[in-house]
Structures are given as C-alpha cells and as structure tokens.
Image (tube, rainbow over all chains, first blue to last red; front, side, top):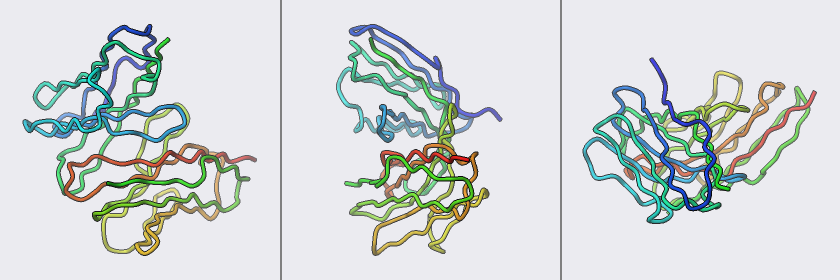
Length: 116
Length: 114
C-alpha cells in the first residue's frame, strides 16, 4: 500500500507568516509522529499522537507550534508567526501502534520549509 | 533523559574499503537501537535495529552493527562499501515504555569515492 505522504514538499514563506504542513499516515496506523531536521543536525522529536489519547507535545519548541490529528488519519502541523530559525525539513512518521513495545516507524519524504 | 552522539559528521572513503560509523548513547532506561539511512533526495529508511537477543545485527545490503552495553555503543560497519552506499546515516534510540519517540544523533555523511 501507499506510504506516508506529506504536503507540500517545499514551502517558502516570509517571516511572520503562518504555515500549515500536512501528513497522511499509512492507513491503519494509529500512531503518528512529527520530527524536525534542521540543517546539519539530527532529527528532533516534536509531537506524538496515539489513537484517542492526549498527544505528547513535549518536543514542541514554542507555543507558535501546534498540531492536530483527525481521528487516526491526517495530521496538520501549524507554525504561527514563522521565524528564520524555523527553517528545516519537517518529517512525519507513522506506526501501527505506539507505546512501550516496538513498532517500526515509517517516514514520509518531508516538507522543506524555508523562512525568508 | 537520553542522548545520542555520532562522533563523525563526515566520513569520506574509497570504494571497496571498510567503514565504521560510530554511535554512542546515554540513557537512564533501557533502549532499543537503530540505524536509519537517508539517500540523496530520498526519505529516511530503517537500515537495521537491535531489539533483543544477539548483539550483532545485520542488514540486507551488508551493513552490520553491534550493541555493546558496557560501552553504550552501537557502531555501524561494512567490510567493503559501494558508491551506492553514499548517504547520510542516523543512529537513534527508542526508550522503553516512553511512547515511541525516537531520539536521533546528528547524522554521519558517508561519501564513497571511486
């Protein structure tokens, strides 16, 4: 079946504007993750959704960042009043189940965000 | 808290030479260990993983990694690299029972030259 998809693939915006990034997980995957990859750095965890449980927002860097998920499907990451340091590749991943036991995370191609 | 350190940001190597990409981690709880690979202009893919059992794990394309608990390391090796192995490699840990969020190292760019 189809993998994780993300849109847009590239987004260029001006400082101070809001942006929305979309993630479509693999069908049937209940867990969804957002990560950020800044230039020359590893991936940083942002937020995690598992079914109907409250999301783990512990990785969000500021209150300008928020994310929503509709049931067990699409997720949207919103960045308000973008800053230049928000420039990064934003990666989404999904897995069949989160929690303590291991379930492989499958990554999308990412959205490259450039804030001018 | 957990952290992952990849000691080399760039590793240039000639084709058919051996390579080792180093990874050390720090964690107060038990973790699963992973290597991910990101080929140019492609998404992140799982290369291999250690969950339990034998401390030596292998991938289908000739890479292997060994979990060393006493040294808290999970170095990645390949005895003979190919041009097609050129990519960025990320080491990651997944703490037990903490919701599934991966903690990544900074990445190592492997560049294989003819």
